Image (cartoon, rainbow, N blue to C red; front, side):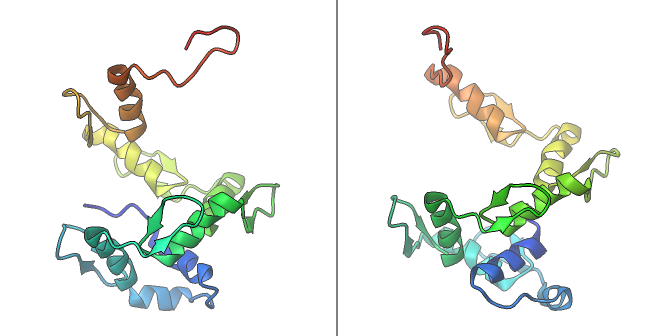
Length: 183
């Protein structure tokens, strides 16, 4: 199973959440080594990411949000979650008025301004500003459909398409016309 994150950005974000000094690229690169989870077929380049992942197997979540029922295995994740409640967005774009709760989201946003698309499909020339968008795109080439409906045999390449499909089984109609009562 592939981990769909930009490790360098994730490491720097986590350090920043704890207000520790930023690591240099050389230090980040030197600590990267593949570490495998002994309970699943995943591997991680940093020990801290492996430990974070392994807590998903135990279900341990000692960091409880005091505004909702959510609990977290990692304090950094808990801190980012709390920003949703209090609206804190400490990362401000210097080219527009948008701000973000996480630094990596600002980094991705800034790519829109400078046109940077560092992720390129190895099957075609299409490029993307986010790795997750590249992974979704690559499924058009492979035909992979990892999102399976639990009510029927249909499968989808994207989770959002599965959610839309599942409404056909539940008859849920989340959008209502503002001109009449039709949903």
